[in-house]
Length: 368
Image (tube, rainbow, N blue to C red; front, side):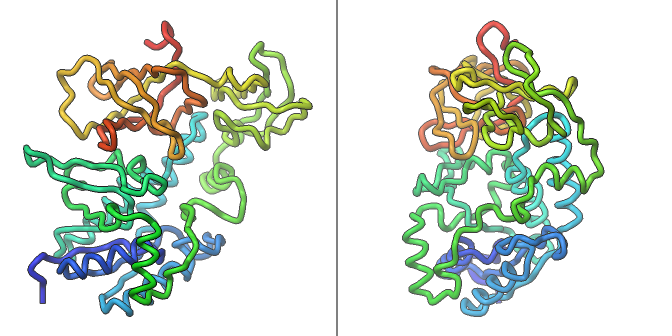
């Protein structure tokens, strides 16, 4: 029998967050169905905690048994391969650094899963993400950071459409991680003390993710020179796809001091490194593919904070429109390692305003 609050399909990775989210939904009066997404073939998933191994579905199924809800494993290997993995290699092959989690959320966890939910008669989907969703005075959807700022995952969800956000529930967003663990123990969930997954979908026994993708898609490993900021050759690399802006380890050169990657040029194959970390600073950036979650079409300059990677503290900035889906961001103070291919996500306090994909860093006059 369908409950008064309706049916919801929740993505259950086997971790404690989505498990407690399922329990909270039951307490709120929803009819809950659990689903584990199989993203890769089991033989390809050698990392022990990955959702692609037996551990993820096994933990999720055990939790579903305790909660008394049905549980299914949904095969989405093909869409994951065609959207997330192909996108990731395409970005690496262009000298950019992808963020597969953002694309996976948009296309798989809130795309494929929402379609599956509709086929099961569920109008809502849910996840264990640490974000909060509210309705503004005009009936629009507002996304806010999770109450536990150390676990906040709103950065990874900027690309969700309004339709996806409207259908989504985030039960653990108003809680701290310690409270979620405590709730899991009180419920007697078998994974209450399970360690963090660390986005295991994209890890494979310590090998370089970019190189794994190159081999998978039979891409070229374009070798080239490693140069300093003056263009002097310091060494040679076996593929620029192995490098990202701000990288310090694994450069393959011995300078007798620390060095960082400043830029990757896919046309020449050159990787530029610097020994002065201040050379990684940029006054701003240009972002494309921008998606807004607030009305800003007629606003010339937007004062907000901009976060350029997951663990980056959002920095005060001014945003100016360059086109329908392109903006220029100028920071109040220069920021370190602006990385093409990563996301720049915009906030007003804890409210997510929107975000886009970093095209390039810029420093004043060269920003257009």
